[in-house]
Image 1 (cartoon, rainbow, N blue to C red):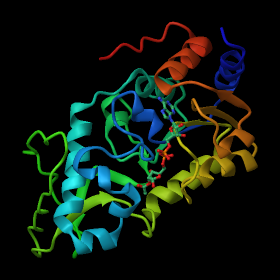
Image 2 (image 1 turned 90 degrees about the horizontal axis):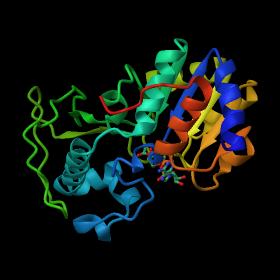
Image 3 (image 1 turned 120 degrees about the vertical axis):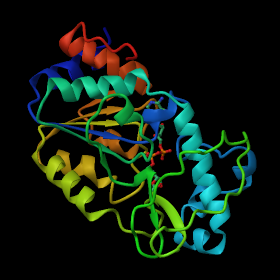
Image 4 (image 1 turned 135 degrees about the horizontal axis):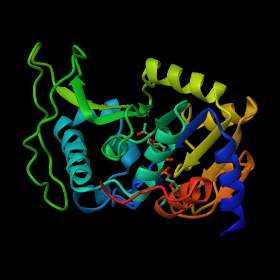
Length: 260
Ligand code: OAD
């Protein structure tokens, strides 16, 4: 067994209050592109950071709504990976654990995590851009063409305003309730496991640093170096769908992580 996995397993075995903090790398092995991956098809000429803004939606609602519908249909086709199932196994094993995710997909939920804290919202929680009332996520999303398409957003059933994706855009505040829950959990945990995040986008990226400052041990799962290397007590240099099951196996043995 790799030395780092053994060290991480000791920390996990001793932990009583665990926070798992995930980013786009968590879903990479499910085929969902990370945020920094180049966009493909119709979106290849766009920079995600240019599309994920209130201004982009105001200027061209069909372009931005179409991009999120393309991402949502990709998520619907994707399946949770063994890393998502390992996170759910950690939560099942340690009752006082909190999952905080920057991801807007629903793969943690589909892997059995009961209540992830979505710091950046969700592709499955659209709302009215005018009155903020929740709007149904269009179920009848046809299989999106591989290169995506523009789709005029639906209208709010209450005020006829445009429905927007329920995700946090650049320049927007994070949902206050989710951020408060994340700060509370990170401040109180004795172990934080950060998985698949570049640790570049604040205030979410502050969460692992906050836990470390409060004395928690930090395990990082990422094939690449990130700014979180300097706060991690253990770096598991590998993909989430391999490193997390290996960690759970090393800590508790025999946990069944096969797809449900
Ligand atoms: P990024 O795309 O910035 O970073 C993905 C991280 O995952 C990188 O550090 C990769 O090295 C790592 N990675 C890639 N494949 C992996 C794998 N198989 N297993 C583990 N790690 C892997 O995504 P985030 O850090 O999540 O915000 O980005 C944070 C936020 O930036 C996003 O939530 C989004 C974006 O702005 C909003 O949309 C508000």
